[in-house]
Every structure is written in C-alpha cells, then in structure tokens.
Length: 194
Image (cartoon, rainbow, N blue to C red; front, side, top):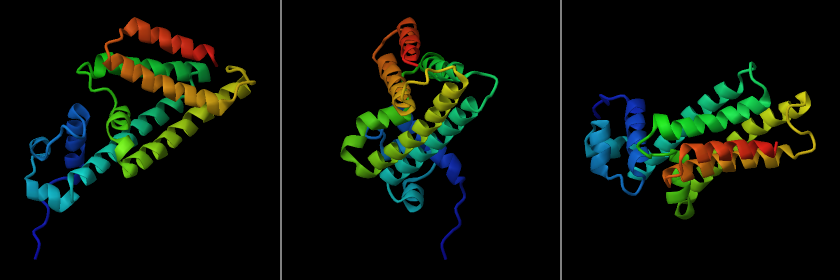
C-alpha cells in the first residue's frame, strides 16, 4: 500500500514556481527544486513525474495568479478604459523596479524567450495564455471605444496586441538596464496610439 502524501502540493508548486522564476527552467536543477519545495527527489518525481511536468504546473499557476490580478484590475469600474490600460503599464513598470528589483522579470516573458522555441507544449500554453490576456485587454478597449475614451476608428485587436507587446518590451528592457523614466515614456507613447 502506498504511503499518503504528507505535503501540500499547491505549496510545492508555488515554491517551484519561485525557483523557476528566479533562475529559469534550464538553470533550475532538481536539487534546487528539492531545496525550494523541501521535498526529496523521490517525492518530486512520484508527484510531478519530471522537472518538465513540475515546470508546466508552475507556469500554469503563475498564469492563473497573474491573470486573476489582471482581471481584478481591469474590472474596476472607477477608472476609464484609458486609465486602466495606462495603469496596467504602470503596474508592470512598478513590478520591475519595486516588487522584483532582483531582475527576475516575468515568468511568462522569460519562458517565451528561454523555452518556447524548442518546447511545443510550453509554446502552446503560452499561446493560450496570450489569447486570454488579449481578449481581456480587447474588451476594455472596445468598452473605451463605446464610451469615447479610445478612438473608435482603431482596430481593437491590433491595439490589444500593441499593449501586450509594450508590456513584453518594457519587461525585457527593464532587465536590460533601461531606467524607469525611459519606460514611463514608452508607456505614455504606447497610449498615443489609442
């Protein structure tokens, strides 16, 4: 008879997420995952099957948390659509310089750069997540167009792609050492297209 698990699987995934986020997929060893989760190798492999499986679960958890934060922010009806979109960009800038000054960036952006080109399942996960965020942003843009806050003659899908591209660019630029003032300028310039 198999022994019951004596650990919280969600906590283990969260701890692994932090490890992958800090070091990247390739640089995170099994021992790093053992140290982060407090689990032995056999517990990790018995529960998660492989480092890759644990990474996919950690990435999904990250996406779930980040998309919940974005949904909550975009659902706030006290701001106009333009204020919401500028606020999203500001939150990214603040996150890069305040919440994560260690330069870890965004696990989704990091994974797109490091893993997606040679890992079809991860690339598919990233594509699905992008689609979710695209539709969230597009809905805000279309609401803004109806309210007169955003130019109605602009394609909402293209503007949503632009905002998401700006987010990725801000994140990568911050990691490359671009200062906060320059990224604030990028955020402002992005919104001129709206």
